[in-house]
Image (tube, rainbow, N blue to C red; front, side, top):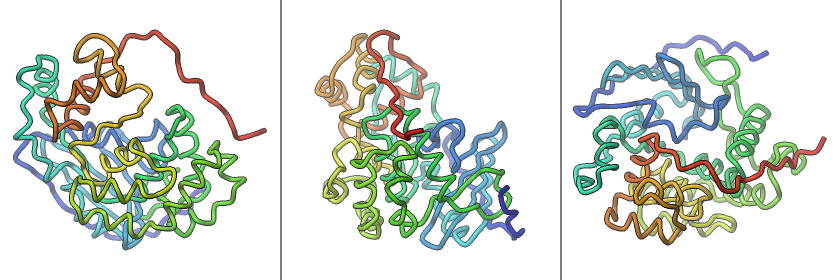
Length: 311
């Protein structure tokens, strides 16, 4: 049974931008399955736990139209509350994105006017999640995430729902033994990449100083053995709010983009060619395609789920 955190006075803020805001849609890239220990979406609010530079925090977000009431508890509450605007897309400027020449994208933008790109400012956490998702199905990655968070995550501060956990500290990740990675279904290649990232975690956080994108950020992330273009893009999309980082090397995305934009599947090169007219905004276009609800035809081979946990 979870320990009951000591009650404390939350830090609060109200975020009310002049543009429409769809909180659930903006934060969707952070949700790791329906039982994510770090995020819970209810009919009226979103709960999120996080580890900040000042310590753990629990955040509660409640939207009323385009206004969001945010409350946070824990040692990292002030840091978490200060980051609510950027988490919900503040600073993500869509004014230069013109999709009027593509009926599909124009309709998605019309229907999803509350969409913005999030920016968590949590580089190591977003990188670790991306590493867990390398070359496996979403089901496998979500299972590993749940196992590791339930095993090593902290009970969150404040009134977080039962079962939620806070992302472990870098020091804790460094001490995860090989057999626990095995039980989580994470092979040596991915676990060793996590360990290498943990050894340089402070320098990863400093990439936020370069803004939302750029070669300096990508170069730093990809200097870690085991982190390629796909993992770096998945990280900068969430941690930095990168507007131009399509996930090249993804199993599903090229076909999705192809079917959505020209009615047939394409490979990575074809995807980049289709996105080229929106250079500088390619991740925004990707989010419009995903937010549209469009699904590619259901045929062709499916990735098989492998279980490396043992018995």
